[in-house]
Amino acid sequence: MSQPKVRIYRDCDLVYAAEARCPCGAGMAYVRGGTDEPGGGRYWDCADILTGRAVDSGKPGSVMHTGRAPFVFYEIKSEGQPSACGLTTRPAGSKPALRARIWDKVCDVRNAVTETVEAIWDRE
Image 1 (cartoon, one colour):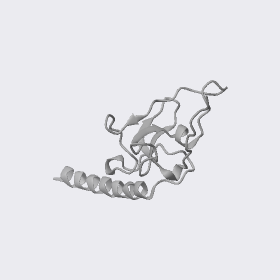
Image 2 (cartoon, helix red, strand yellow):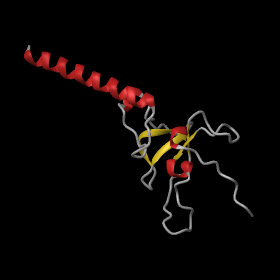
Image 3 (tube, one colour):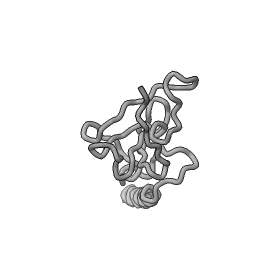
Image 4 (cartoon, helix red, strand yellow):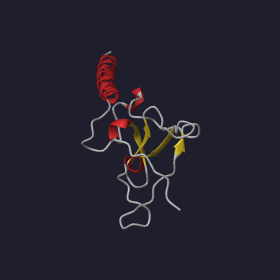
């Protein structure tokens, strides 16, 4: 029996988690806009599986990966959420999402304002 064909995505097709990682060490991610699977495929999965970087089970170098984490059952912070402050599990060298870079700047400004307010309060 043949294995079903699995679509391989590029890093730019994925939204990465801010901090959550698969046991293999890769970041968790989901396909921007959902997949073409029945039901839309709205779930978190290991980015190495989604991008085809994972070694097939049973082959040398294969490791354990997490199962899919459907949105309805799991709450994982994505790199684009304001409270992530620019954190991402995106691999080094892959272009981060513009939204994540913008929020990184927003968080820098917020932190600077907080430090200034705290300094003013400490003087009084």
